[in-house]
Length: 278
Image (cartoon, rainbow, N blue to C red):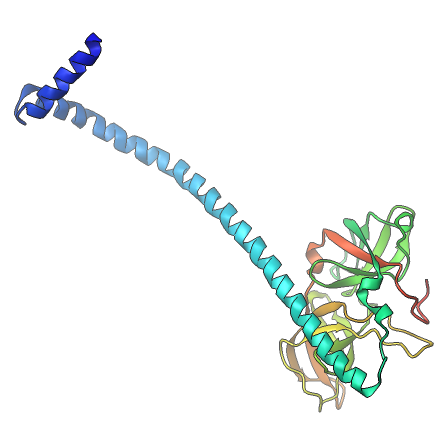
């Protein structure tokens, strides 16, 4: 109680005292001594505060980037679905029932696997995943990730499988330009996993940068494409005159980043494709 009374007295004196009074002189002296110390402490702690703020801002930005990436992926899938439907309507008008509903991607079972090994070559041609025949994975099953087509299964064991990427020099994917563009064959650009080539597109076909490509999924009843119709491959990044006469050279940027694969989905158990070994 005595301390409280003393504190009130000192406060009263402080408020009522002139600036030249003894208590004010003491306050100024203490302030003169402590101010450099406070400033030094503030400067010393500034890097720590800045680091904390940087972490906060980085995590906030990373969360925003992840959210934006998911939104872009969802919008791209919606656009691809709309353009595929538009292209299918054109085709169906030409020949009703050209593609059976059973051939859609929904007819497949998705088996999720993690990449556990990569080929050491500059072509990033094969990876090994931790799912195999024990999970129903079979040779020639298509493989995708959250961004698009990755490749197909070429070898299996009970607990693992080898995945050959679409950037492998032996790979070839029949593809269709959306919404109702021509069909061609997507092949890798040697040594560059970020660039594919769309071959066999005639000079008189109109191809624009930004057009999306999906797997063509064709079949003549005896032989079939290695992939079902509608898997997203990438978008046209550049067009120009081709090395072969009467054909264009069309560069394609794949949606999937082959250098940064971690999880993939194997599409297995789908409808039989004539001519594709099982």
